[in-house]
Length: 86
Image 1: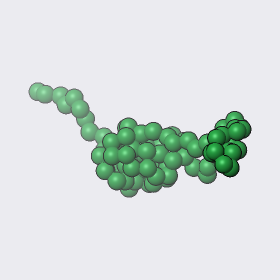
Image 2: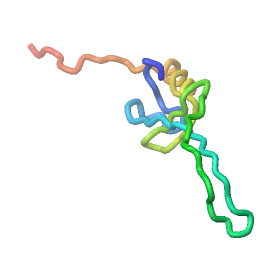
Image 3: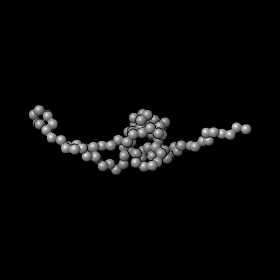
Image 4: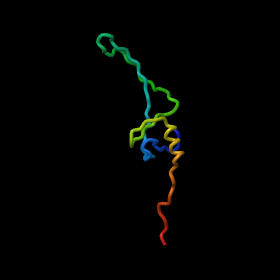
């Protein structure tokens, strides 16, 4: 995952709550008549060119670059939160 800000391109309100979705492959053999699982192999991770990200506000799922590019198009504006009063 990149160390860059995200911004959900769907709900356009979330910049902080996300999850990364990992995929695994697991081979198995089934009995042709009963459907019973006869043999399984250990799961192995599926390599992906870039991570799949899910917005935890609206549940939108997309590749990481969609979230990064949206954050670049609409950057977070820093404002002073504690102004001095005279």
